[in-house]
Image (cartoon, rainbow, N blue to C red; front, top):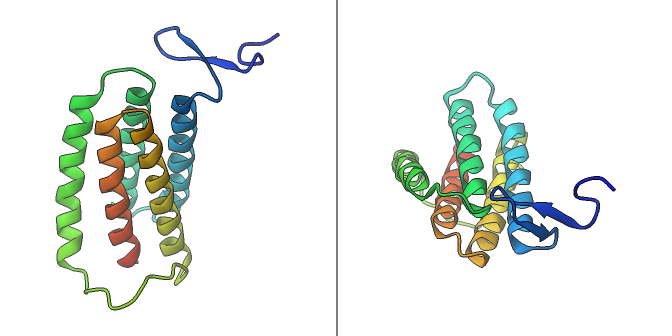
Length: 152
């Protein structure tokens, strides 16, 4: 039987856990978010936002590593601060909301809102496994993606 075919998978430190372990679910959700961000990045190809999304995808790998038991708390705190600075810049150019947002004005905006919702689900999963620094980053990421989507 191949590795993983017994309903278990291995974490970085060699510990095998069931594939239904909440950490594995959090890792799968982070992977899904990274893929959605890849789609959005492709739509924004050549723009500064595409480079930002690429950096975010790399940070999601650090969040996943933390969720899997590795120590990336310092790096995630630094990335959270950088993300908050980008949020402040976007927030300054934003018009006040006067109604609920209904995604779908265009493909890029819709993809960014999809990524935002995936980030919220990831945040919930990360809080569930006591991965605070990663959860805080995902919280800020959902705000950033909301602002970015509304700018499109």
